[in-house]
Amino acid sequence: MPLPQPQKDPPAVRVLLRQRLKEINRSAEELAAAAQVPSQYVEDLIGGRRRPPLPGRTDIYERMTAFLKLGRNELAHCARVERAGSRTAAGAGPDEAIGRELLALCEPATARQLTRRKSAEGQAALADAIQRLLEVIQGTVRRVLEDEIALRVAAARRGSTYLVMRFRVLEFLDATPETLTADDMAEFLAPRIGLWDVDLETGVLRVVLRTEEPRGRQRRAV
View 1 (cartoon, rainbow, N blue to C red):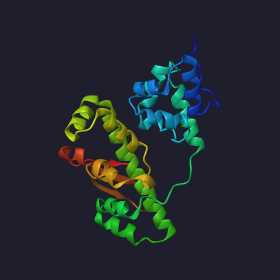
View 2 (cartoon, rainbow, N blue to C red):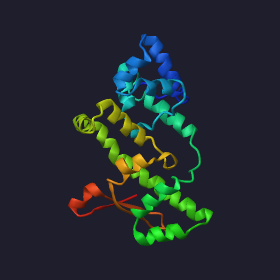
View 3 (cartoon, helix red, strand yellow):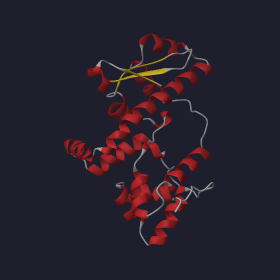
View 4 (cartoon, rainbow, N blue to C red):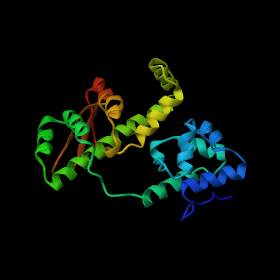
């Protein structure tokens, strides 16, 4: 029997979640427990107060799919379509303080050039570079979700809980340059970025991750 094809016009994630929970007579709290997120997270998704995260930046869709007994990619497909439909133009970048911290991690010569560029074009170049830099770091942090033991150990060291630590990671994975906080910078970005640089002519971004330094400071080009 051929596998069902994704719908061309799938329902919004909040609609699918609400409908499926009703069909199987389960609660939002039970869905939250299955996805290992706070109940408020699921309630905000269902209520439309939280945008669905990108499938590549979370593991909640796999967990929710199993609990709700949905088609393998049904929920993730809905999220992709919904995110694509609500895509907006690139923002202005992070606030000034975080922007300065990120520039401090940049190749000095490039950082000076970016700082001198006060034109709208120059600001757009900086915002674009920071957006792509954030995506690189989010890609490395995404793997943290796969190591439950490490997350539990980290939570114990901080006097926190596994659920709180996991939710913290999920929140960062859905962050944008405009929503970055000082805590995001201290916890996720600064510890991972050894150096970053961008070729202002070609737009090629290079990031040296701190975890790569022992292997010869390999650069990742984007």
